[in-house]
Image (cartoon, rainbow, N blue to C red; front, side):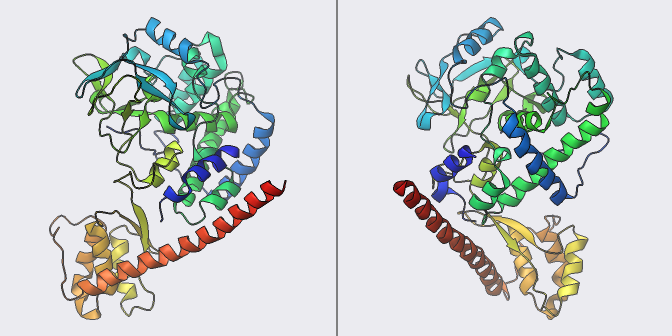
Length: 449
């Protein structure tokens, strides 16, 4: 896919070495809260089927991801639907992306946007096809799959849907790892742990679609024709939701698409979020800096690492700008440890993995849980009475001793962490060397052509 290549080339050296927008958590339905799949089979089927369908399917709705072709129609519709006069407008911004720019001077601490609740798309929005919505709700379909199906249903109606102008402004192919092929994930993210999370997410979404197709779509083909409700359109709708859903804390935790507001781009230097303002009865955000006319206006998508931003939103910030960036460091017990079984039993008792456990490392340091795991790993048999305490702290279950320290083994624990970091870095460095050679070969081939 060309987009994957473009995104990767633009962010090659800023990829991680190894109320915010909605955090992804998938479930089939309220009666089936978790998803348990044979992931390998599901991923393989999703990749082969999606690849075949993509060759023959062009979505009849939406626009090119950087297009302004429907911007004016969107703004006119929003104004007619209750959006008050704005101090921002849609325009092209850096790297050709779309964004909201200031039309007038905006002061620091000023509330802007004021999107009314009537323009929010959520799980309780009215369906243009009420019978289809009733069938899904009867089957207790959870909010996220329900919204994904709703978006497809409304998009298929095109001009007949009240959301047609909004949907026409949505990208046909969102920035999302959901649109990367397996070969692209393997090629560009081979040394990153985000690769496995992307593969798992594709499997989860494919499994959710399979469940809906089996339980509902196949039994009501007149409401959910397979020409419309298929893996390609489902992947599109999930790509839209995962990159645009907003968690509105002041509306009792409602998650919703917020037309107009979802044109705002993320900045690591901004700390203001979208939320519902009860006094104005609208979705707003309060600026934490002033903007001059023509400047792009930003919000924060949350304190997320570069990997999390890439996974959900399809971009990586400029190198060194994200102070919330973190590296997932995998740690595991040494099988040669004389106390391996005893330590493993303590970890499993507190819900930790028998194979390895990942902890985030930031420039500012690492969490106490990681240090506790390191203590447990290097602790000698003479400290067996403390194994339980260390495991509880490593799982964040301990609320008694947040200052857990063992000075006699602290140096060994820190060295264990440093050795684990060096091991992860060496794997990534080898990958980068191979990738650089591949990129040079590609450039040489283009020049010869």
